[in-house]
Length: 206
Image (cartoon, rainbow, N blue to C red; front, side, top):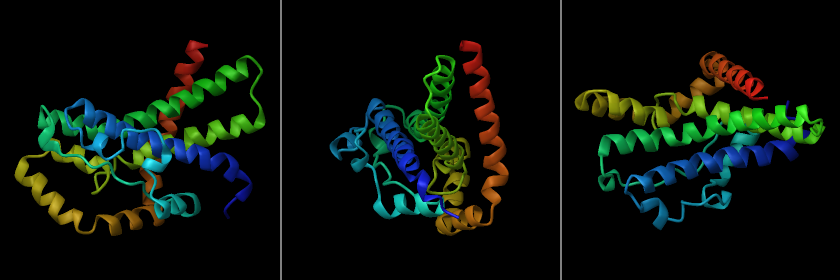
């Protein structure tokens, strides 16, 4: 059952995770020589530049949704393969960093005894959304980032065939994976392991 009392914390946390995921894609593309995201207004941390209203609502209400993909032109990259790998991983990397940052701030505020219940819940949801986004986007099903990464490590013919075959049914496959619970079987353990690592590192710092 959806807990509407947590929306005050979940919605800002969700916006942060979505916005910085897409912004990181745009920033990486810009750094690799493609100015398309800049010209399209996507090189921004303004959530409105990245949100798809329906996709965001579904994320909040159903746990499955999307943001507007960042448009890129890989032909503008100084190095095509390097550019594709860096741009594809940038969103995941941003989410993993924000997950660690949330844990770090929580432990720091706890240490100095300034952590309030509201702040803790907001940081908890920020941690949760970001780590979930990171590992979900690594699933190698189009249009997720994992499929773009996989394509750079497969032989060109195999990558083309995979994209054509799986890409046709990507959205349907993802819906089945999410609502069947299959995603939790993989994402759950990976997310938990990464969060434990974040706590371990943060404890060492403090």
